[in-house]
Amino acid sequence: MILSNSMIQDDAALGSGLSPFNHKVTYTAGHKINLKFKGGNNTVAHDLLLSYNLGSTIVIPQIKDSFVHYKIPQFISNMSGMVKWQLVNTTQRGSFTITPVSQTVKMETYIGPPSIIAGNTDYSMAVSIPLDSLDNVQKDGTAVLFNYNKEATRTQNLSTVDNLIAFDYIYSTEKTGNILLAANSGNQFSKEFTVDIKAGLPVDFTLSRKRNHPYADGNQLVTFYTSILRIGLTISQVMAL
Image 1 (cartoon, rainbow, N blue to C red):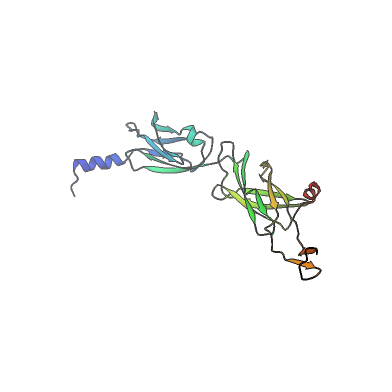
Image 2: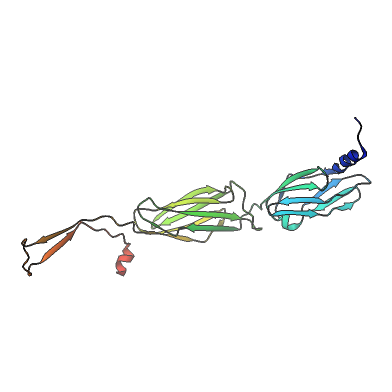
């Protein structure tokens, strides 16, 4: 088979002549990342294309002796996630993962809806996101503890981060009142939230009457009766009436 000059040039363009040198599979967010390649005396340094969570960018090479360096920008090395790279105009490519800082410094927590009705059927939901010092979400499997307090009863539910969040359901009780809750991961706690349990939906009741005689003379009194009506109020609400 005879190859034309153009085909030989195209094949040459695909090879970079560079060999990855001491590349890591994972890095910790916030650390400086320098991708190093080893080349020869007449090495041609290609630009490096990076693809990360928020887009793509080009990194200009720096040649020192027989090595080519690509210094990853800090705004990328501070961000957890997978980063893919490719030497421009070549087929040489690879990837590495940036993991979040292990220590949690902030708990982003959200509750909704803030009020539910009594009766063990309605529920609210708590979502918590443990963050590191660079605002990265902690890795999947990180433990998050949801703490609940209603009157004298205290409970805890354990959840883990999955697809960037940890969550838990907050079910209503038979009695009205407030449920206080907070989430924590390790020694880092969120602020305290309140879920208000309000009285349930009204139920049907019966209405009857009693009168002295069946005819109307304009003078008799009629007494009306209902079945027992129960009002779901707390003691403090009753005292305020």
